[in-house]
Amino acid sequence: MSTLRYPAKISKIYLFKLSLPIFFSNFAIPLVSLVDTFLMGHLGNEKFLAATSIAVSVITVIFWSFGFLRMGTVGLVGQSLGKGDYREIVHIIIRNLIIALIISILLILLQSSILYGINYFFKVESETFILIERYISIRIFSAPAEMMMYVLIGFYLGLQKTKISSFLSICFSISNIILSVYFVKYLNLNIFGVALGTLVAAYLITILFLIYTYFFVIKNLKIIPRFQINIFLKKKIFKLFYINFDIFIRTLLLTFAFLWFNYLSSKLGENILAINTILMQFILFAAFFLDAYAFSTEGVISYSVGRRVKKSFLSAVKNSFEISFITGIIIAIIYIFFAKHFINLLTDLDLIRLLSYSFIFWIIIIPPIASFCYQFDGIFIGASETSSMRNSMIVSVTLYIIVSIYLLKAFDNHGIWFSLLILMILRSFTLNLFFKKILKKF
Image (cartoon, rainbow, N blue to C red; front, side):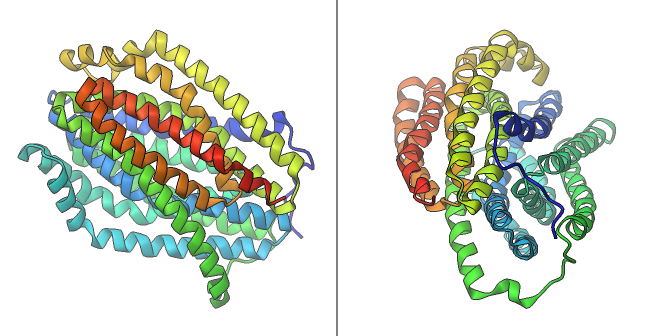
C-alpha cells in the first residue's frame, strides 16, 4: 500500500505550497545562465558572449527538444497516481530512463553534424566558431545525465513532490555555478570551463538522485524497481510514442523559435547578438519563475484527470492563471526599476550596456503577457492533450517566423523583440481554442 496521500480538494493554498519550492529551483536555473553570461561578459571580448549565445542556444534547442522526457513523464505518472496504479508508475520511470539514455547516445554520435549545422547557418568569424566548437565538444557529453534528469524531475512533479524535484534542480544549478566559476576564474578555461562545469555537475547530481529515487520508490510505493520486459508492451510503447512525439514536435518548434530569435539577432551584427543575449536572460528569468505555477499545475491537472474530478481541474486552472499573471506584473515592476543595474552586472562593456538600455521596454511588457501561454502549457501537459499543443505551436511558430521577417526589415532589433511578443500572444490564443478538448475528458 502506497504511503502517498493527497487532499480531496485542491485549494489555492495547496497550489501555492506546491509552487513555492519550484520558485526557488526555477530561480536557480536561470541563475546558471546569468552567471555564464557574467563570466563571458567580463573577458574583455564580445566574441565570448556571441559564441556562448550561439552554442548555448543550439544545445538548448537540441536538449529541450526532448523535453517530453519530463513533460510526458509528469502526465503519465500523475494519471497513474490518480488511478492508484503504482506499478505502472515504476514502469514509466524505468521505461523513460532507458529511452533517455538511448537518445543521449545518438546525440553524442551526431556531434560533428551539429557543428556542421552551426557553421552553415550562423555566419560568424572563425575565432568565434572555434569558441563555439570548444563549448559543444564538451557540453554534448552531458546529454545522458541531463536527459535522465528530465525524467527524474517529471517523476516527482507527477507525484506532486515538488520539494524533491526542486531540490534536484537547485543542487544541479548551484554545483554548476560553483564549478563554472572555478574553471573560468581560477583555471582560466574561459568558454571551455563553462561547458565543463555543466558536464561535471550534471553527472554528479543525476547519479546521486538516481540512487535516492531507487530507495524513494521502495519506501513510498512499496515496489522494488526492476527491469522487466513487459514494460515495453506494444500498447504502452505506442501510447508513449504518440504523447512524446507530439511534445517533441511542440518543443522542437518552441526552441527553434528562440534559436530563430538569435539567428535574426546575428544578422544585425555581433553587438546586437551580444545585447539580445543579455536581455534574453531577463525573459528566461521571468519564464522560469512563471513556470513554477505551470509545473505544479501539471501534477494537479494529471491527478484530477486520472480521478476524473472536474471541480479540482477547474479550480487549478483558475488559480494558476490568476497567480501567474500577478507574478508577471510584479516581475515587470522590478525590471522597471532595476533592469539597468542588472545589465551593468552582466557586462562591463560600455557600448553593450548603452545599447541594451534602448530595448528594456520589451523585457518589461513580455512577462505578464507571456504568463498565459506558460499556464496553458502546464494544463495541456497535465491532461496529456499533446496533439493540441503540437498543432498550436505549428500555427504560432509559422506565423511568428513570417511576421518576424517583415518586422526585422521595418524596425531592426525592435522588430525582433516585437515578433517575440507576438509569438507569446499567438501561443495563448491558439491553446485557448483547444481548451474544450480537455473538458471532454471528464
